[in-house]
Length: 481
Image (cartoon, rainbow, N blue to C red; front, side, top):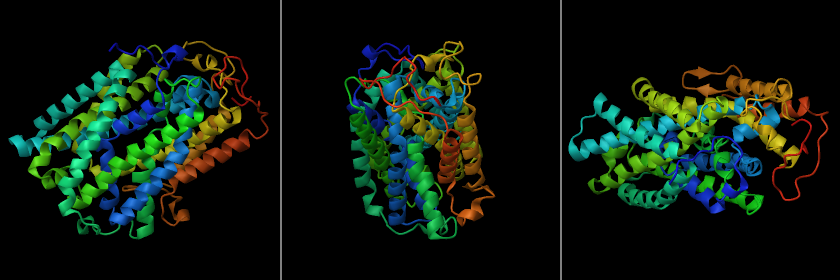
């Protein structure tokens, strides 16, 4: 299969040969990995019982999917990735906000996937062959996972899609075996080792789990969905079918692995760590399937994240090729793996990362969706590529390439969220206003969206959409975009 040559340029219609089923496959297959499974461990580690953990993950995932899924329709219309498409709202240079947010999200999740997958691999290899759990072992395993991940990401979308189709079937079978393996030791009671509710009470802890474990999953895709839907042609597949496929793919792709993580956390009594107890509690016959899950699943998920990072860096540095950008971010992600392994606890690192990035990313997603609703999905696809061509002008040029109202709205929303966040090592000054409950994502999204609507309230909008539902290259767009 040839290496993909496309970066963030517009995909020609003849190359847009994917469909809704491919979207479901890639969202399901790529997420059946330990990097997503471990998020199901967070609620039990916060002190919740099985039912509290289950409800927090389901509520957060469904709510996050409702917000995130419509973003898939934007790249369906623009035939480029979401950060580039957001230039319609933020300006062709202002869309760098989306590129940076996407880069940080994908960087964190790539590092987390390789980190957790590598830890489980070392543990399994230790039980099977006596591999010592020392720095050399971790370094070699992390390096092998990173190298395999880079190979898939550099070859591009088609290879990753083929890999996801295989993983969707193979990983599902491995998870089913895992339920059988861990079922004899399952308990629905809260784990005493967790030390009670992390935030002192049920509801504050439940809301924290809803955001950190449930909502964070869909939010991780706010800049990624367009990487896949840009290869779907709106001339052959309706927006409704693509939206339904996105809902199905996100809900299945997140709930299945996360609830497996919750189930195994209770079965393995994994209160303060996940990888070690998971390996220790595994029956001998499941060690090989667990090793396959840790290796193949991690490569599939991290490969997609790394692919997205390469696109985002390519969008930030147009002179860099997608392949070179991917190699660069792979090095950074691998460094983050070692930093996480040696200098941070898993729970603190994960909680801090997802809460901060959710607070920063949510207002960007809200503003981008408001713009999509205003323009009825009609974009000037050629004008979105001005920055990538290293030129000037076009209807999305605004002021020197930046739409000040949109950028300011995002900054105000993100700041509001950061001031209301509750981290293991930091509590925002606005937290007392919400009774100690972390509502940072909700506050950032509402504030960013409301400010954007107020700043652009008097801006006239162009009604209508392209007759065939595709992007137009003529400037039939809302005047605020």
